[in-house]
Amino acid sequence: MNNRLRIPVFMALLLAAGTSHAAGVNIGVVAPSGGNFASLGVQITAGAGFEADASKNTVTAVDEPCTVDGGKAAAEALINAKVQVAVGFLCTETLEGALPRLKEAGVPAITVSVRSRILMEDALKNGWPLFRLAPVDGDEAAKAVDVILTSWVAEPMALIDDGTIHGRELVDAVRSALEEKGLKPVFTDTFRPGQEQQIALVRRLKKAGATHVFIGGDRADIAVIARDAHAENIPLALMGGDAMRAADQPLPLAAGVQAIALPDYATLPEAAAAAEALRGKGVEPEGYVLPAAAAAFVAGQAVGNALSDNKPLIEKLIGTTFSTVIGAVTFRSDHELADNPFRLLEWRGSGFVPVAAAAE
Image 1 (cartoon, rainbow, N blue to C red):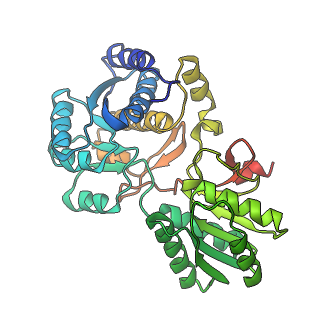
Image 2: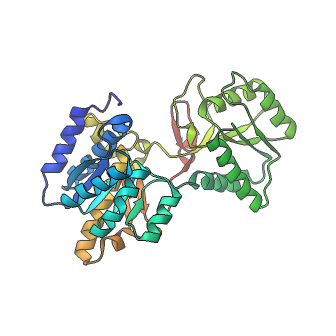
Image 3: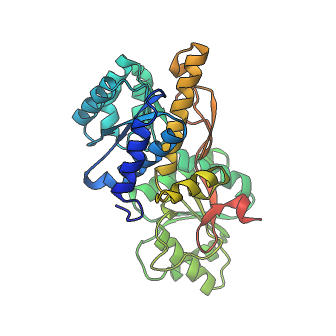
């Protein structure tokens, strides 16, 4: 658990949100309270509790053991507590167990984490009330393709991966989508990860004429490639994926390296006030804190809209744009985010920032 967000702080936020405003919307918060994911559970519950307190709503915290049976138990606990919407849900197994029962009770679930495309397909087929405030499988590659077609289409481009399942699948998805658009890389390769130097690789990239390289690999390997390209006086524009959101070690990443990744929400203008208020309470607005706050805000607003308009809650969740601490949130008719949450970011020596901000 992150030592900047201690259990006493979390409990204080939870109790304040859960007992002070009983007349508001009752929002279920499903998150692990123990085990390997406990620190993430604290982030979710603290973020949702903070928002509920600000909006004068109530939260009911339910443990998430990340099993199908645990999901069934969580659903019963939510229903018994008479929650109107449930947020959180780190694990696919929890949702698989909970959603059939939540459907019967008319309680929508908003996950801040689960990316499984198959789960949402099952949810839509079965009428399960699942909404996803998180990327779906394929969003990372789709955003990379958009950026390449917008900014690199006239450049000699290479696609390389580290041979891992994620790295290979990411690059394969990007390559297939680009080739459908008639854009072929001048160089493709799989490199060996975890090496102290990649001079041979950057020389092969130069020989192939590549000037722009999309890499399915982790931050450490991309840092080595950037360093060796600079040492060899080979100008390469490098872009990685969401795996770039990792510790800047052992080799610091060179400024200007880009990533298709989820942003650090705490650095966004929309989150400034909430981030400051959270820090004032001793809570670092990292990880799932702000997404959980956004989910709780969406939940509260949707219930209020449904009651005021005398409309079904799910109807008010679809197509409405909610102005949250992580930006505008809109769910499509398929219960997915209308806007791809991945962004083009650039490393500026101390953190990744959106490219538009990096240019300022």
